[in-house]
Image (cartoon, rainbow over all chains, first blue to last red):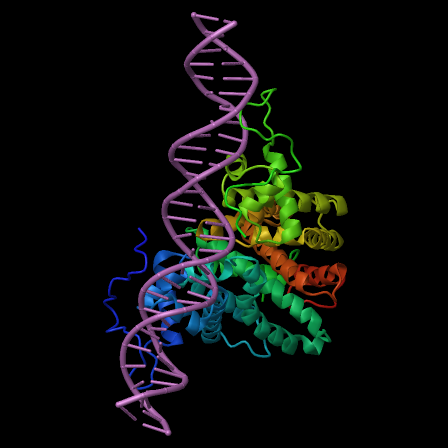
Length: 215
Length: 215
DNA sequence: AACGAAAGTTACCAGTAGTAAGTTAGGCGT
DNA sequence: ACGCCTAACTTACTACTGGTAACTTTCGTT
């Protein structure tokens, strides 16, 4: 059912007539559109369309394009939000400053997993690049996660005489590992986040051949 | 320009008339369609359409749907091909059996990178899930890479008393790391494959805090 | 009071995945 | 030998999506 053109009086927002509003204020601003997008994605899955976002926001499509830009920009903005939430959760769980311990790494990874679990569809929407224009643009969530990690790694290991180039490669690698593990974990319902976090921490801390070591 | 319906006598294949062909043979079989898809993707980028694949194969769209199924199935099949090529390259570079060494790991990683570099657009097409139906289906390339790796890890580390569940988590993590590093590496043109492979090997072998260690 | 621009809406275009219905021609039974 | 059956293809369409051009309404300003 298409319902071409007519849009059936949204019950959420008032009047919705064209024309300049009273206080020079926008009826619906960028943040509200992004909120609506998150709601739609959480409810209807990662295949949500721009039109659906517009309807949820009680607005028409061109408004969405005016506020956030095209689909790639929308994914970008949502990726930023998700990345911020991850960073906040990680910061709350542990303090990763110059002294990185195995336990804080474990906390970081588990916090990441839990955020992905809580925003399942959003994660799928953001990491699922759409066409070629967004294919490399998927690096956004990655970039947002990678940049601070790269800085942290550099700060932490600078004393060991490691170059920043290595830190960058490592950061991308670690972020990729976390993203894939998160995705895989979403398909498993028997494994707990802490269990998986523990296992990945072991790999990342001790390396492939190292096992049984403590601390 | 759409050119609705009319399809301008493909110059590649002969006659192309409806009706049952002479020898009970199909005019174009599944493999040939997949070959055409690879050619189109390599030439026109990861945003290639089914229609473009059909034209390249000298065939009409429903034929493509009959031979390989929908877009998700196409990505699936191409993912299998790519994974097989990676596995072949890795097997040629090193022998990963029960004895895994740091050097063989490095060879494995570098072989992976080189295959991705050689099939750049195909890699982007396969890893760039399209909609929600393929979003989790992106796990195909991953699955194909993960299964043997999981088995290898289990075989290798069984002596250490490690469970297979850990091996599975590790396999997904490692594959994710490699995919992300590959993607990032595609955007860099200053770094060589061997250089990056070396760095990632260091991380994966010695772990985060371990540096300066040898072999 | 007239005007200009901001804020929205309607209506459209182009392209894409997928499918239904029609068409041709070889093989098979009588 | 003749006519039906059905495999193999093609034409032509539907449904939907991202994106945009052009029109309309209202407020603030002169």
